[in-house]
Amino acid sequence: MENMNPPLAHLADDPLWRAEFRGLFWGEGWLGIDMYKNRRHGKMYVAHRPSFQIAQAEDNKAMVYHVQEVLGGTVYERKALYNSNGAKQMTFTWMGRSNGIARKATDILREESFYIDKKAPKVEAMHEFLLIVESLGRKPRGEEVLNRMDDLRAIVSPNAKRREG
Image (cartoon, rainbow, N blue to C red; front, side, top):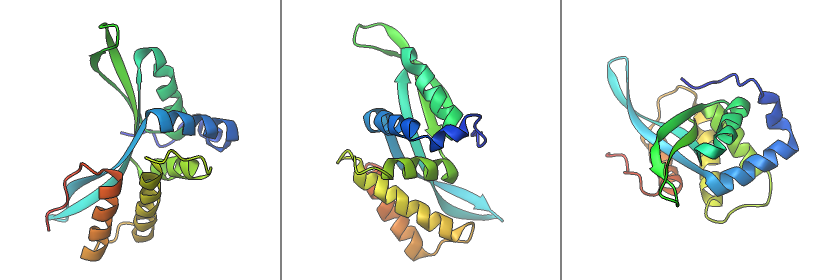
């Protein structure tokens, strides 16, 4: 379960922290739109959710735990990987998968004109995705909305499979 009340949430308003988050995310971050099936009231629905990740090696794990303390989310320990010296080390990945965390992260990434060209279209597509989700709330999504979400998902997560109509 994601931490939705992080203890250092007030730092998300600090310009220096925001700049450091942007730098860390542009270098080490990933964002995507996950699609999954959700059963509600006996019917199967297609659902989408945002996903933000930052992965670090064990020697930098404090960074992802700090992001968790400010934005919320979850930190996962991953199995040992081999580093450039051939030694095993753990990987620590911060993940934010709620609309609230995605909104905070997207707003931070959009506020400066400093964009990494490769990720800028993905951040803008995530922003549009969140606007759609926030406007609909828990209402059912029509085919037109689902198609637009698929289009946005293709921008943000280009290798993801498309929804089968």
